[in-house]
Amino acid sequence: MKFLPLFSAFGLVATTSSQGAYTFSGTTITETFAGLPATNQANFFSATVGVQTAITGTEFVGTKLSGSSTLAGLNSSGLVVDNGAGASGAVYSYGPTGDADRALGLLASGTNVMGFGFEMINGAAQPLTEFVVSFTQENWRGSTVAVNTIAASYATTGSAGVTSANFLSSTTGFTAVTTLSLVGPAFGASNGALDGNNLTNQVARSFTFTGLNLLPGESFYLRFQDSNDGGSDAGLAIDGLTISVPEPASTLLGALGLLAVLRRRR
View 1: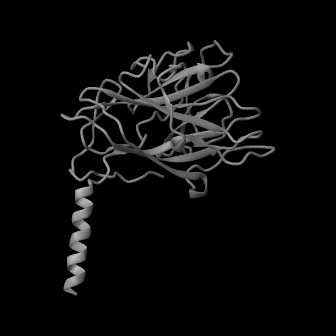
View 2 (view 1 turned 45 degrees about the horizontal axis):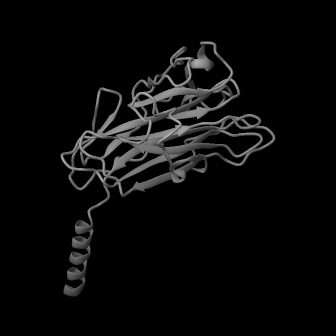
View 3 (view 1 turned 180 degrees about the vertical axis):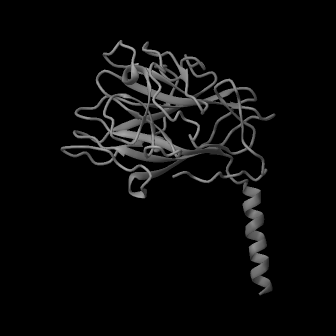
């Protein structure tokens, strides 16, 4: 289940870059993940830690963060299409079997811990100082020993050691955004598939980034890093991602003023 696009006051349409990054120019960007592959993609990611690979049908990239496996294969370096039944560490395209409605997810294991994220370039003619990132967290599989968390963090151009090629695995320059971290459901003695399209297995997440000074052409990086917890890990995903500009204060004040005038006329 996806959020509907949230258009800014400018009424423009979203634009993206063909270089593996979103381009933001005052327009709402919407990512539904409907373009994810419909079948399993073996050897999709590099088995080498830190090598970033563009994820088909999106402007996201993914990489291996850690894990004992050095083998290529579906669960070691593939993109897995799944309905929550799979328990191997991988990047997942989650959704009901045969359904075009997809969500991008992660599940970690001792052999394979993955991460994903995106770069957003300021394509406007002026600095970008404030914007909102929103999405739906979908839970597609439970955990057995602990509540699992996939940690969200961000960086910008100029952050120490961060580049377009290494931002998913960089150990410096990032700031945690716990509001956007994916926090799994309560753990149980046994786990299995969940219906991530059911509202009971969803969490709406949103965060307003403020105090930034992203100059034209500079980049913002948002990443989600999984970790291997004890027992069987949860399969958590994101869907209906939007990046938008908050409604201008002048617009809101104007609307309130008009409402006051109408009330007085009554």
